[in-house]
Length: 572
Image (tube, rainbow, N blue to C red; front, side):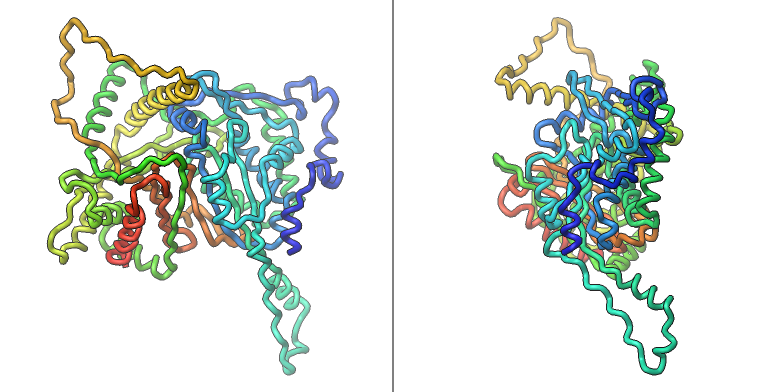
């Protein structure tokens, strides 16, 4: 329980730490530095930039209840010394220094003008204090942490874009140390001091901890979140001592702020990272291509929803054993698909077996596309932060019927998985990814601004329904697009397919922190649903985040059972 006491009794302020912790930081500051000198370490520098269309499309819906606020939970074992507040806070300060959007604030001036405002830390101590103010210690369990974040009062705000919570639940006391070997009479005299030291090191008691990393979605995406967690544990559970971490904070602050740059150091918006020529022909061609691509999205399968005054998100999660995961991945490879493609087929077949909607309407599902490989603008160190939005979207459309002959079920499943793979590959390799991303960003931004304005007017009681546009005197211009019957394009479900996260988490780099559990998601809007699939620590994890009050009857429970049944039947 000593570790719990340490965690739950943080120092009242950074000034309560020993004088020698920050004495060397203040020694180089002079009174002139505070008021004068563009390179003075104690002078605050402010940077700002407008949000891009994609960032706006995430920011505006989040204002009231925190829709899309991301979280990443990691369960781990570690010695008590690793999780002391001073060490955790130093690591948090270092990473906030490297990624300035994490400690910026959002300022809304108009629906089309929302800005990141970043006040650079005036000193290493300033960076530490800022991190300390955005760090919380708790004694909640994993489920309590996630439930509070998803369903309780909003944790983040326009002035707090990121936050970290570290918890050691009372139900998870320090693990008992491994007892030393019992020497035998025949070799007791051969025991050496070095062997005893090794045993003492191995027997160091470890506690169970829960880490929750919280960040606004308009700051970045899942890849940024996981890379950040890897860097966090690389510092926290790595080989550097507390003193070395303090020194690293001093060095990195000086590298950035001893001579502060005049140009904006904030990461660019998504659209600016993949610029396109602004010719009229290119814009017209991009619009035509985008509209044609959108017309091909035919769906119509939806979960029956119900209205409820209160949203309540739950995230049932299944983790498969390592040996079974290997067998599943081997089977997917034998059929020429990845586990991500197989999960599209799982959702498709599970829904069809439930007898959902009309078999004539296809099943449309969507997922995120990592746009980092398409970025043509690269920043030089030390301003090369990876915390920025870099996601687009693609869709997979599959048939909603199943063969009448049960013997063809497996063949049909793997055919659907290959179809999902082909559609995913086409989306990723399409030469018009950049232009489609710009067009989608523009459409999403316009839609978000219109809805935000309507929401605000409804809240003030001033909203007036728009009046229909008058009929023009001249005949309408003939459309350049081919005449097609209007088809539904509703999506059944979204999938967040993170792939093999063990390619991101370098577990060997943080020997003092043993990760064992990972869960991720975001605060949802009413009636939302998202399925997650990834491998972590050699195990396949599948989870379903959804609003338990937003769907009729037990329809989601039945879908979840069918989905897990498909995994058992087809993946092994």
